[in-house]
Image 1 (cartoon, rainbow, N blue to C red):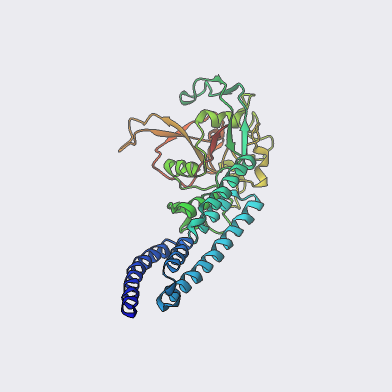
Image 2 (image 1 turned 90 degrees about the vertical axis):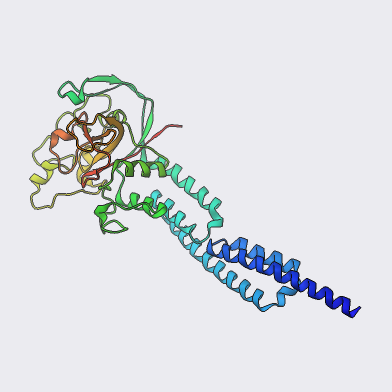
Length: 354
């Protein structure tokens, strides 16, 4: 009987060793992937099948290591999620979404919790940071220039458009969450200090489209952009019929503004800078003239003289801090190679109404 019992114990030990080798390999894979709950579940299941393992030094050591790492990951996850919730409370939704995504790097098994938070942030972002453009008849185009013709009355389906141009801090949230390459103008992974609220620039059309897709939005068409800027009264500029009412009054960050303020260095300004609040469009959209050109989704013919041309150009709207007042007109159309990033080209996003 003793011999049979010893043989049985030996067979059980062999089975335990075989199972332990398999479990250990799986636990290591879980540790590499930050799957802490799965790793602990594997160890607990093994101990239930082989209670003697609870007295095994290898098992004890591995369980202790996983528990310690799980607690560290839990603390880091909660830290980042708390920071994301702080951004959410401040109305900085892109940062909230990106920081929550970063939390998953520590605890990927909590994806459902993070996705639910991010969806709430995106929905509130749409509500707070986008303007509803109603479906109403608006004049767009002009009879002055071939590329703007014809002057026509359109009635588009209602849509949403960003109240402000996409900022550096918005774009940083995107690059941090996805690993997408940052703009060359940053000179690193993060935006330059004190320029977080400036519009992002040095972005190609594809860069802008990828951000929009990540944010659950899209780029506006040139018609949508012009309707949002121009309103129903055929105005020349987003703010009205004339460029400026007084010599020292400017409603947009443009060439004339810097020529007047010669003591300042030309460049982009914060999207919500109070100096240009008077430039809001009839529908309540800010910065639709000046600061940076804005990519649209609308294609344009490629000039015959273009060398190594892309399949199609894309239309830019709004002018920039480098352009004179004629480029700031709502009807102005400028087509460019979508592959080229520029220091005065950015974008804003739109979205269909559900």
